[in-house]
Image (cartoon, rainbow, N blue to C red):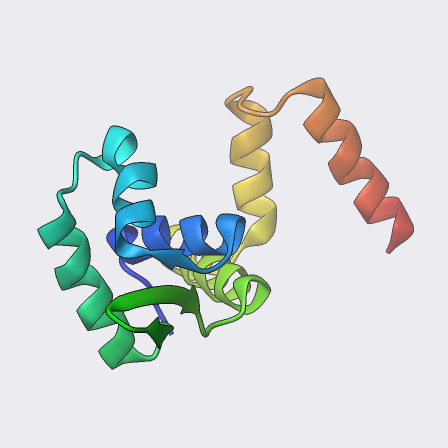
Length: 118
């Protein structure tokens, strides 16, 4: 399932903090997004309909949490990105990252270690 940028922001917040109320989500996301409570309500309603998040209700309070798996979502998003931008060529992507000096020495060492372990 592909997530929109807005859905990623909400889902990342829920993955990081666990189940959250509308008030907690609004407070957490306000500084980085500027979203009001009404914007988040609209997004959550769509996300519930799409099966991305669900909620438990205690009286009038709803606690939202993600239904989808983080790792699966990251893999799908990464695969889609590589297919779209690099025509599926991971080597070209890494070459571009190295060539643009976007990777730190620590990140390069981490990649080398992963390759060696494979």
